[in-house]
Image 1: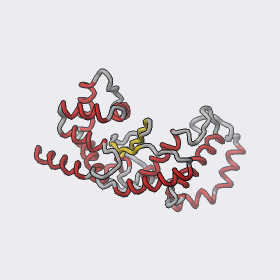
Image 2: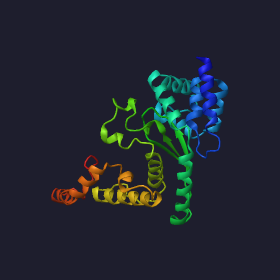
Image 3: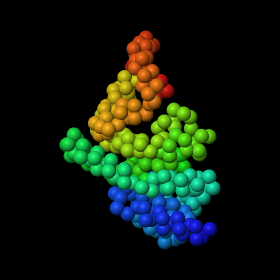
Image 4: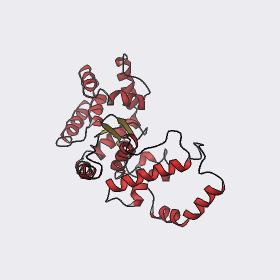
Length: 258
């Protein structure tokens, strides 16, 4: 077992060279395989924001003033055989980041021209155990790669429905990274106490921004619909608006309705 873990660690480290993507996922995985005080200190220094943010997301535990229990809980959480296998699958699936580096470089050029030189946040990868898709920090957004393993990934079948699986494909990584950025960086002005109409307008702004930043993505990919769903939406657009207006939904602030 020790030999296998050492080989995994060497393979993981070799895949991160030359990429601008922060591989928090591989660094934490190496620690989980071999939890040492040295590794603990290294993670704390290298990821002063991302590490505690993952702790809140995955195990709902603060890092501050409780490091020993925090790291023990992190290891215990990810050491579950099923979750550890998912973690390894995510590491393998996203070992090559060349595509995402190239996409990010293209997007940065578009943002520089379309958004007055607005700078994209750094992109990091982590594994959450099917929790939140993105962790948003100042100047950094981390994507939970275990949520983008593909619609046919075996471990998804007992946890997610078909409409959710459509969003859980590798091509959605950059879309969701940008959605998190657009939504959090005040690029889209949203009302805090909004009604349905304001929510529709805000969502439209986000989708428009994504279509500008991802010109090679179709409307279907940006929304995350199948061809059949896109056709259904177009066919039922009029009746949908009629229903909302008839039932006075447009100015409702009821969250479940929105």
